[in-house]
Image (cartoon, rainbow, N blue to C red; front, side, top):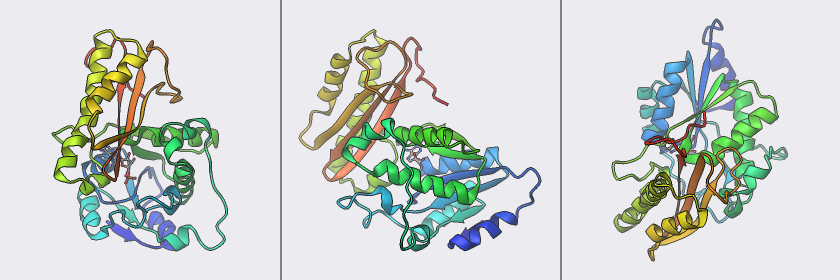
Length: 290
Ligand code: AMP
């Protein structure tokens, strides 16, 4: 595996691979790898000739009051993990070359980016789509791999790719969870033991919602109150509960087709998100979006 730390070296590194049938799979990340990231790298390895993984803690997707400075960074540990999962090129550009002085261009997706996490993190998705557009231009991947854990992010990037006629495919892979049900996240390391107990309730709440939908409940307000009941603990501060169309993220009044149930909550200072696709009428199976 090649570690490329400079923007100027990435194109020559890609050119070292033979041109013939060179399918490039790309996994954009912010590092601090866990099994969620690794599942994307492994899948990319299975489906491509060359796997590029980027690690870039992107400043434009963090608001000034968020954890940009504190975000975990450990390239040495990530390097080993990426290599073992099948990464060919680990691309870790520096902030100054990605956003040089005078940088002035942003990519913004409307509608879906203003909902859910977009409400409490204004400008976040503009940062995400901007860095993705830049990385897609630099890497020229055939397929880019995202996790369903960040469902909204993946959907918005898909919108951008469609709207801007980018010549690549987006694949969205399942959420990897701990045994306890907690969705793996680089931010879980901030949780204290008691907070981890609270964090488990996010998945419990999603499962509860799925259970009652499967039992025939179609009234969104009753589903929301069932979720609230599970999350009703002093340490949990709910940001949103969204029961929405998986395609547009618009809230549903009544459940008449597949739905996305998405949650964001602060547990202490740690903001966690989780979601579940529920297929109405499909027993024991979540809906598929890709
Ligand atoms: P991040 O480093 O947090 O920006 O995440 C990089 C990629 O890993 C994104 O596409 C995430 O959706 C994905 N990812 C993060 N956590 C998980 C998880 N628990 N399961 C699957 N994919 C994940």
